[in-house]
Length: 378
Length: 201
Image 1 (cartoon, chains in turn purple, orange):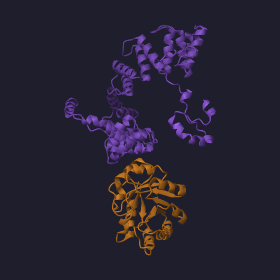
Image 2 (cartoon, chains in turn red, brown):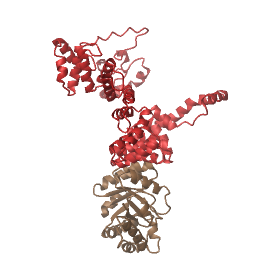
Image 3 (cartoon, chains in turn orange, green):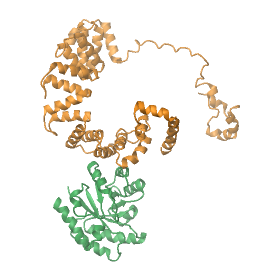
Image 4 (tube, chains in turn brown, green):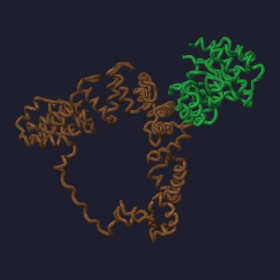
C-alpha cells in the first residue's frame, strides 16, 4: 500500500505542474476573480477521490501534531472502515482528540458513539454533554439530537420550550428529521404555541425532503384540510409517493382512495395490489376488503401477481428486451473467439514443453500449442 | 477513582544490595505491579536479578513483570511481561506466549497511532512515558486521552512524579521510578505516594 501512495504523489504533482507553470497573468486574473488561493488539504483531497490509504498516510503526521481536521478525517476512515479494518475504538480515539481541538463534527460523532455504546462504553450522559458542546458550536445535527434529549428530559433538563427552539434551528437548516419533528411540535403545540398552518408548512417541507412518515402525515393534513386547504388529489398523490416508499399506512390508505376513486381515477386492480402489499407487512383492513369485494377474479389475480414482484413488473408482463442495435464499424472480437484464447496453455504436465516453446509464443506469430486439444474446449 | 501504583526498578541497580532495599520499600505500601527493568544489565545478570525480585515482589502482593522477554517470564514464573521494543510483532508474540494466564503490557508508545495499534492487541495496559530518566512531555496528555476514551487501562509513567500527580491524572495506574530511587529514603518516598492514593480513594 505504501508503494501505491508513493507512486501516487509524484503522479499528482506531475499533473498539477503545467497549471502552476502558466504565466502569472492567468494567476493574477484567477486570484482577482476567485480571491486568493487557499492552501489545499491534500489528505482531504485524496479522501474525496477515494484514495483512503493515501489520505490516512497524509493525515497521520498532521493528526499527531494536533491538527483537528486531520484527526477527524482519520476518525471517519476508521469509523467507516474505508480501506482499513473498521474500528469504532480507533474512531472514538481520534474523534476524542479532534473534539478536544474544537472540531464540532468530531464532538457530535463522538457523542453518537457514546449514545449507542459503539467502540466506547455506552454513556448517555457523556453523549448529552458532547451534543450540547457541538450544538453550541453551531453544528445542526447536534442541535437536533439535543432537542430530542430535552424532550426525553433525562440527561439534560426536561424542557419542551428549549427543545422547540433547537428543533426550529435545525428545521430551518433543512434537516429533514427536524422539519418533520418541528412540524409535529407545531401541530401539537409542544413547546410552542400551536400553529396548524405553520406545522403543515414544515410537514410539507419534510415530505418534499423525502421523509416517508412526513409524506403520510402531510397527505393526511391535506385530506382533512388541517392547516392547509383541503386537496384530496394532492393527498392521494402524497399517499401514493409514501406507498411507493414502503409505508404500510400509506399503502392501505392509497388502496382505499383507488378503490373508491377519491382524488384519483378508480382502479380496483391497483387498489388490490396495494392491499396485497400492505397485508404482506401485516396490515389487514376489513373496510378495505369491503371496498374491494366486487373486484373481478382475474383482476385480483393480476394484482396479487404484481404485488409478488413489486416494485418490478411480473416477468410475463415485462416488455421483451429490444434487440441491441447493430454497431457500425468493425465488429469487436468476442471473448470466446478462438483467436483470442491465450496462446499458451497452462498445463502442469506440459510445462516443460511450454518453456521450450516460450520464445515462439512471445512473438505470437506461431502460437505455442503443445496440446491442441486442451485449448479448444472453452 | 484513584490510580494504583506501579513500581519500576532502577536502570542499573546494585545487584547485591537492591533486593534487600526493594524488600524494605515494598513492606507497607500497596503496589499493584513491579516491573523489573532491563536497563544496562547483561542477559545473565538480568535473569538472576529477575529471579530474586519475582519472589520479593510476589511475596509483597505485587504482580511482577519482566521487560521484553516473555519466554524468560514464563520460565521464571513471573506474572507477565512489559513489551518496550519490537512493536506490534513483539506484543503479538508475548500475547501468544503468556495469555490467558499472564499479563502483557505495551510500552514505548511514540504516537497516538502506536497507542491504538498496541491497544487493539489484547494487552492488559498501555504505558505512556519513559521507564526512567527524562520525562516524556506528551505522556500526561496521552494518558489522559487514553483513559477517557479506551477501556484498556492506561499507565502514566513519570520519572519525576510528585505525589500531587495522584489527584490529577485519570490514568488507572501511575508508574514510579527515579522519583522513588533517587529519593534519600526510597521507602518513605513510595509510602508518600501510597498515602496520597489512599487519601484520594
